[in-house]
Image (cartoon, rainbow, N blue to C red; front, side):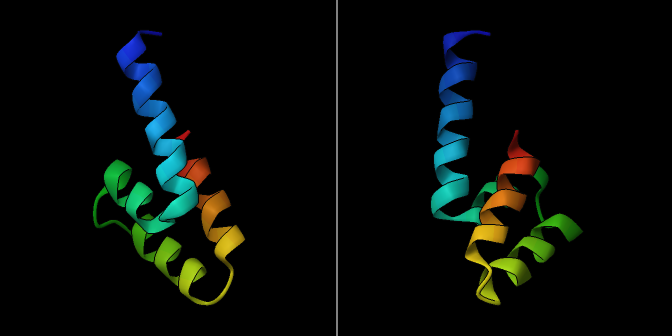
Length: 58
């Protein structure tokens, strides 16, 4: 894996931890996965939102 791809993956992991819906949006756009992640994150299941975002971005 190139250095740029490694840096991009690292940034996506950080984004998935800090702002899970933003990471999903960066990967999938305004899809059902994005809206699902918003619902999971806003309903107080922040950890579930992070896990979902990591599953999408990795």
